[in-house]
Image 1 (cartoon, one colour):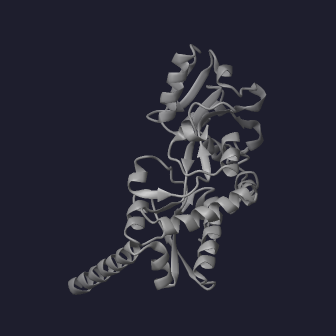
Image 2 (spheres, helix red, strand yellow):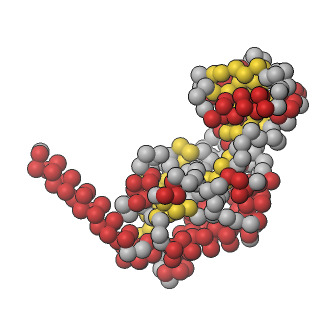
Amino acid sequence: MKRIALGLAATLLAAGLHNAALAQQGTLDKIKASGTITVGHRDASIPFSYLDDKQQPIGFAMDLCARVVDAVKAHLTMPNLKVAFQPVTSATRIPLLANGTIDIECGSTTNNADRQKQVAFTMSHFLTASRFISKKPDNLTRIGDLKGKPVASTSGTTNIRQLVEANTAQNLGINVMPAKDHAEAFLMVDTGRAVAFVMDDVLLAGLAANHANPGQWQISSDAFSLPEPYGIMLRRDDPAFKKVVDDAMIATFKSGEGAKLYTKWFQSPIPPKGINLNLPMSPALRNQFANPIDSADPAAYK
């Protein structure tokens, strides 16, 4: 058994070294030589990249990556190029990209300065921000509407820090109510102990969509933070591959296809349960689709 285990480990190591060597030649060369492009995906990052009831990866980012795959096929003149799917996690996505196991990572990965030291990103496909959710009858849409009211947020998050900072800076007199997790904070608003819950807008949309009465909720127009970009990850220092991917993303966004895909995944019922996130496209994201960039600087997306 030990010999079998050692043999398997050696085989996996050899495969990893082989992938890494191919990746060093350039992703397009690696794909051409292997006849396969390997797409990294998440299993539960709704609606970006997740598994459906048939355990197949689907989502907004997966649809965008399908356009990238088509562009690679055209560039390499390989219409029968195979597509392999590799599940990744927050911990494994960067190492598996760096060592050549995957060629692109399609999910909800934030494009930031620290990550750009290890990987590259194509044009940002989503912008999240810290907003608040409340009940529609309360008519709360702006940060100033929360003045003097109890507002919940999750302990230990950047969101509650942003709430406290805004409260102090604007002298709002908000009663900040820390919650142990997102579910508890949302329940505080549901039961009337708080009028609003501050968190990433896409997470708030998911909570509302899964509520028994999703139509009673609204997400604020005002944000407590600058937009944070999500992007598809690529290996660094590979300008030839990045150009193919960037061109595919720019074409998708500027043709209007990006907006259609957004409507499909954020404003329509999605599988497997048919929930609708009902998350309108923000002005910042609309501008990003019209003028695509790959910046890690949130200020670039104002």
